[in-house]
Image (cartoon, rainbow, N blue to C red; front, top):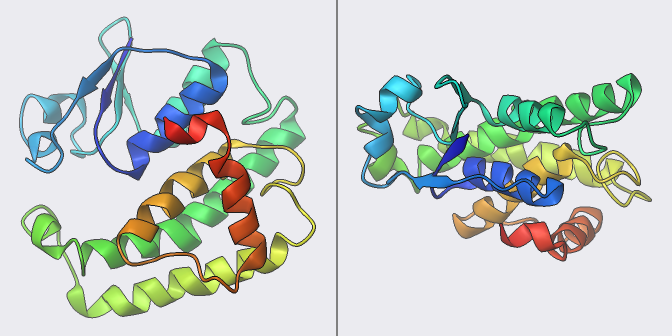
Length: 203
């Protein structure tokens, strides 16, 4: 197998998960800024034109970061990162869906439609007038999550999970493009520093 890698929070999330699991795969670098992901032969691997993509040994491809991580988790023996019991796995997936839909989707589109507009406008439909509102939606949900993090070490409690990996990769990226964590969010900022201290954070 090999992983088609690039800059950005999505590949970072998969690399960080792999480092947590001790999984090593060859990386094939894709020039995201040069739009290599938006033309052939990459589009044959992932018609959505997104990174990363996992090439399996039989030549098939898996895309979407959660699917890639869950596949790698299963073939390497299930870990607590996704969950060792049905309850743990359901809890991880619950938090990942909440984070993805309520925080990451509006925050990343807010970036694409504003600071990233020059790069993304030729590649997708952009709505610049929506950027500010989308960022506010993400901030509202981050504030909500900050309240829920009171007394918890990680998103799912004391268990470090794929939900932490997902949020960390994007929070780290968003801080570089004008959407840092609010200093008033004490719980989330403390959580971020705990995850940042993990060796996998440098993946």
